[in-house]
Structures are given as structure tokens and as C-alpha cells.
Length: 126
Image 1 (cartoon, rainbow, N blue to C red):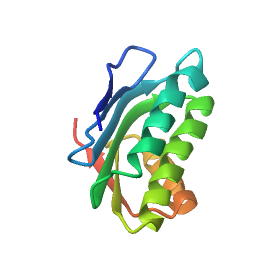
Image 2: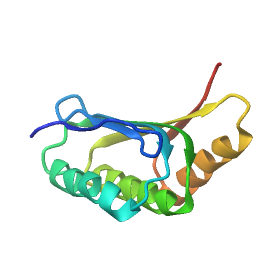
Image 3: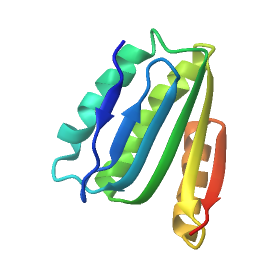
Image 4: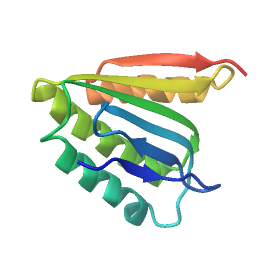
């Protein structure tokens, strides 16, 4: 299976999913004009990937800001990862936030509670 990559812009996050290593990275800002159009290919890739994913998957999420419509799709990404966990894969979410951004830290904790996935919530130092 091919890797999946979208270069980040001022409005959209960088997405780099490595099919062979199981490392899925999402970073930057997520305020796309059309959230469905941006995230739908990501979700379709994850749907296909679940059948061929390696035993261990690590999702590294490091967003400095995302809007409400993006939050829905981030949850959809997490739901797909939960499906992989339920299929016997080892899944870990590494949620990164700026050291002084308590709101983003709490958002990670909320996603952890809602998704039921194992999380490492990590403060990034400036």
C-alpha cells in the first residue's frame, strides 16, 4: 500500500502516513475551507489501511489549532484507529501540545476519554 501525504498550508495540516512503519502524523493548523473535501481522502486511506496495517500503529498528532468542523474529523480518524485496536493491533496516540496551551492539553484528554484509545499526552517545549 502507498504512503499518504498532504503538505501543510496556513489552513490545512500536514498529514504524513507511512504504510510500512505504522506512523501516522498530523501536524499544524486545521481550518480548511471544505473540511469534508480535505479529510475524506484521509478517512478513505485509513479504511483501506486497516486491512494491511502493521501490528503497531502510532498516531502522532501535533495541532496548534483546529476548528470545530476539523474536530469532528479528528474524532473520525480516532474511530478508525479504535477499529484497528479492536482488530488486535497495538495502537498508541501521541498527542502533542505547546507547554503553555492548557486548552489543547485538555482537548487531548477529552479525545482520550471519548475514543477509548491509549494516549501519551506530551508537552512540547518552545
